[in-house]
Length: 271
Image 1 (tube, rainbow, N blue to C red):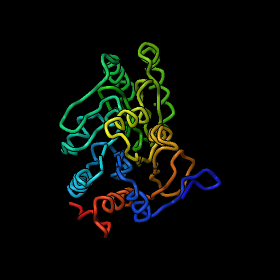
Image 2 (image 1 turned 90 degrees about the horizontal axis):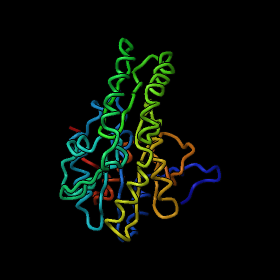
Image 3 (image 1 turned 90 degrees about the vertical axis):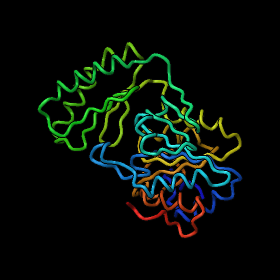
């Protein structure tokens, strides 16, 4: 199965994709979190994994010939707290922080932490009184979420963010990236593609499989072009570097259940 003539990802059922992946001798499975393993929520704090999902990821990571990584824009500590599974790999802040099985971590030296903290304070002051905006301060990045904001107020808020960040961008080599109702400032040399390539060094010869739903996942899709299996999570095909398409986090969980050895594709009850 391949991308269609329009260059769009090809829809595929979880069962069929699982059957294809099982033919590989070894798999390294990379999952984005928000919008991929769980539906997008109004705020990051509202998107938490249910116990059945955590158990499923643990079973999948224990399957013979399988390694599992979660690759998220969230801080590493946030992801590790939601998935306390010592056998999985984690990439936080789009790959600025990595955690390996057993707890070993790597992170960039130095960074723009103080500048980002000051910028967060300035941005919050500028947005004071405007409803629906959420400034998310992370160790290595800063995100402005506006999913709950009045659309008429969004352009001015985004402009204020960009203007406030001008000095930090020049001084620390930062770049803006967009996502689903979010504008984020992060280091220029950090992205999910670099994170995936680094983690693949831990399991040579494995077939890499990456599942993601947002703009930041395109870096990982591009990094694995021609060498891995890439899956966009979206309700309908759209331009993407991904090869395949599954519709939503429920289908991602179904795929994971098949790969964990559940022939019925059931990942357990929610709760």
